[in-house]
Each structure stands twice: as C-alpha cells, then as structure tokens.
Length: 286
Image (tube, rainbow, N blue to C red; front, side, top):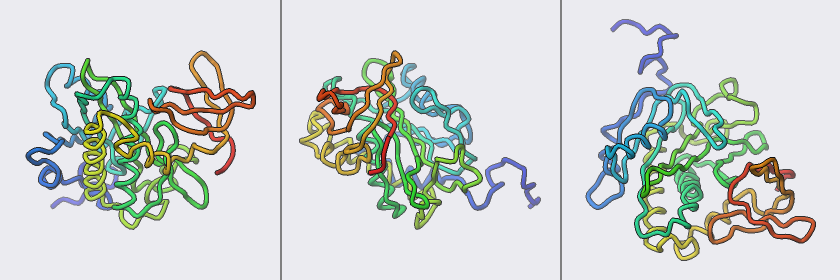
C-alpha cells in the first residue's frame, strides 16, 4: 500500500477520523415498521438540506430518507450563516419528515423536537451534558464557558414535508474551531468521539421523539416534548435580546414557550411578547 500524503484529502488521510460505516448504520437503523427507509453517506457536498429538499421536490425521496455528508462545504444555519468543519470531524446530516396527521401550525416544534433528540442521544452516547439555546443551537461547556457545538435547521420541502438538518462538532480541536466561541464534544470531555455510535444514538432518539409527537398529533405537552425541552433549555429564565426581522429588537426575560413553540419574553413594560423567529442573544449567565 502506498503511504498517504498527509495533505491528501482521501477517505483515509486522517486515521484519527475514520469514515462512517454506512452498511452498519443501515443494519442498525433501517427496519420494517421503523422511520428510516434509506441511509446514504456522501463524501462531500454543499448542503445535505439542499440536496435532500431537491430530491423530495423531485419525488425521489420518501419520509425517513437520511442523507449524511462526511464533509459539508456550504452548510447553513439560521439566517444563512455558514457552517464549516474539517472532513469527518462531525455529524452532518438531514432527514426528510412528512408529519401527516399533525396540524401545520404545530410543525414549528420540529426543530425543537430535533434539538431534544440530539441532546438526549448525545448525552447517552457521548456522556456530555448539553443544553439547548432556543430555537436551534446545541450548547456544551468548555473550560467553564458555554459554547455552541451544534445547530439545527428545519426547512419546508413541498406541501407535505420538512427537511431537518443537523450539524454537530464532534472531534474538532481548539485550533480548528471556526470561531473562538464555538465548541465540540471532544473539547467538552466526551467519553468517545467514534461517530458511528453517536450517529446511531441520535437517529434512534429522533425516531422515538418524532413517533411520540406524531402519536400525540403534535401536541407538545401530551407527548412529553414541552416538559423535556423546557428542562433542557438554557434560554429560559435568562435575560435575552431577540433580534427580529425588520431591525426590531425585544429585550426581557425568557419565561416560557407557548403551544406553538414560540419563546415568550417578558419585557420591563410588563408585556409578554411571543417570538416565533429571531436571533436570540443571552445577556447574562444562568
């Protein structure tokens, strides 16, 4: 075998970051009566969300299709922020969901549900305490500081579908972080950074939470989602600034979530304002 050049970006150029085992993932996750129908791993793509949404629009993907990338070159967060990381250093994947039987008004819970699923799956498999920043960030503690280690982006796919995308930094070292305030599971003290068991745990957790939510017709209280999200949400109980569309901002204490998953902010004027979309800045520690 010819030795690999360290600069070679092939599948085996970084032996500390081996490729995912797609055959094992399929064996562990695709089953009769389960959510997942197809699991595909690509070496490199711009955005798994964009790719899977395009397949759904063309009728080429069913509910439960999972698209995973070893490297994303144009991964997106909210407000079209870029999400980049070295090859095989994280979990970058999207899932197509078609929540028939759930009122569209409750589909706003899907990114929150995915956050709960990712956090609970990683807590079991990586042994890392995680917290959720409303509406779509996964936080870990590194050297006593709260850092963003992951994000979620949910986008409509046609009339009956939603593509939920997840990006989680797994093995990134401090010198590889895109910004100083970012984090990774490794930097937060994960017991292991083998991505195969981490991904299986997250996808199984998503399947469980999604099944409970659909069985409850999207009612977040009946399915236990509201209680679990509230318990793990780092935003609630803090003073925040919500930067809203139209250059408007609301400052106050984040006190609750409403039935549609919106964040309720109590302002100094005594007004409780529901926020359904916006950039949330935590203004003081918990």
